[in-house]
Image (cartoon, rainbow, N blue to C red; front, top):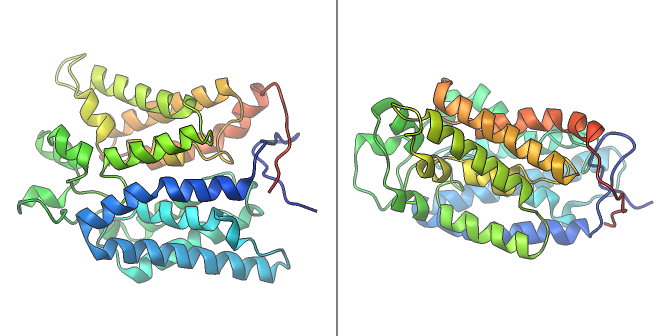
Length: 315
């Protein structure tokens, strides 16, 4: 019997469409950010992406073989997980650690819940969080991009520089990607190009990205300055992992609500938690934590807010 993508609590809501086609379209959408990551951080970036992806594929195949399930490594889902995990890693991470992350993403973040469609949390973010807890120094050590003059501040992300030194990184650098940060999060331009492709292909809708970005930006504008309504809104939208999270992580159809209203609630929750952590929390960034927290609330959102139609999905 063909497997189906489960995206909600019972009774399960099913989305129309071919899962494999959608996953490979996501891979295509991630190409601009991949190119930007390699351009700004060098060949080490592509090695990390290859290692996390290969580790995710091998782990998926091994677990499915051990569980006597059909091996589905060609459906693109493990590839997407591997690439997104690499996008959330610092460019200086050891390759063996990146490989461990790929294995964690599939084994704990995905297969432990029963495989594609059954996982509650975004697998790539599960792996990133576990790596952050296990190797905090490595995961918070940043390498400057290749095309920037050396400065002590270049070893920090724009959000860390703002929090520790009250210095705003130029918006042009944030938009292009010539700043420190994780491999796939620095170039707003590349991420927007990829997201537009997914929108045109109708694999994502505007509801989560818009509400996520708008809520985070609005709250940072109100409370992020020395006075109310004086915060650097556009800086907070372009800096850190907000665009990567809003456009590619929070929109995961498995771990986000199925109804339009539910998606907007989900996006606003992600944006509010992100702003809270950025402005009042210890770490300078809160995108990953906000998405994981809202992933946990997705079944509750779907229980109270249901879509009108319940079409089936074909693999």
